[in-house]
Image 1: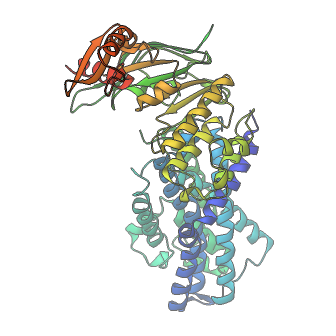
Image 2: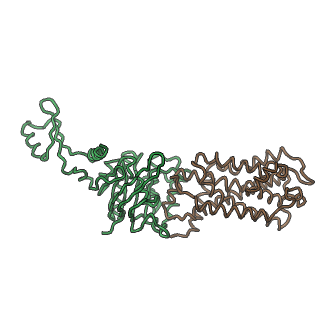
Length: 261
Length: 289
């Protein structure tokens, strides 16, 4: 057998080609968040704390949801389509290792995620007063948040890919979940201003913790006192993300289906 | 000679609480020799695809013994990938990878195998050389099917499974496909084929199995199926202004007699034996009654 890693790498190339050639997916996955950034960032410029505008708060949240878009949303929609089209069944009939398939997915998610984060950082700093992390320690925190967040998002996307009954219906099932989580997790509104039940609900899911983590990177340290827990709760963020990574891995291993029958 | 495929007492039941369980495969025995082209014929829902998908390792079975190249496809464990390296599968229909080109796809699949054929030669062999840089989404149904075949044979399989491979082909493409399959056989590939086209089975298969309601009705050569070789010949001609016909075991004798009756040509003479299709349909109909 050829090396699983080498074929995984080749699959990454194929996945990226396919992604880049589908205009809808490029627009939907990469440009839509940038558009939202423009709209919300332009409309809500009020100060929410000394030296902090809502635009900055929003950009931090959008970077967090970028991880959810490129990982969870992208995979939970495209994998059911591949299952419907017979792509997965055909691959399963070859000596390609399933691990190579997932490596390919991780590569395409990583690339689109990096492009997305770069776009949001660029527009955020140029137009909406986002401050890049001021210290090496903050950059480091940013990097592990992106890494952990995207692993979590990717694995949950694979796990969730068994839920939609058909490829056609997948985006109707997945997109509302992502949008609701965005509303509940402090992307479009101040998390601290949301009703308690919404906050409690959102706290079960990774996005709320990712947005908090991103705010801890991009907003002044003083803003921590305005958060619901009156701190950045970094440890909780790590624990929640790790827990979901474990849950996602177990669920994926048990439920992943190569064909729809 | 060791068998490429060996099946004994294969059974597969699809549970259905509403309408009662459906017995898709009901005790099938099969033996396909190495190097043989073996066709499975049968109406829709007869159990063809279920049987083939069990052999391909896609489905579990409820009972029976199955060996493909000496390996049990229902219990592959760590032989999974090395076994799949030796088989090629053309599924019934796929519409994937629409944004890749033919060449990209075939080259990519060739990397999965330890002993692949040359991707460009395979593309040419299935008649897609002119379309090598076309996106898959722009291919016609028949061209897409030929791509499926290309992906099935790219790994130089020892056994090739073809599930209704020529659906959507025009007659010319079909002939070209048959030649490709016969050439693969010459290279030593064992081929298991399901098809709806009786002429296809006749042109390709060394032996055919007719399946209906999950059971094998008969396994034979296309020429001998259903006693076809012993069936009476039908002689038909125009005599006294109307079409006459007789059925006989001795057509040469009868035609000689007829020739003596007419001065010169016997008007509109035909001598025919039942086609494979007629034999097949009579077998399926007997089952149905």
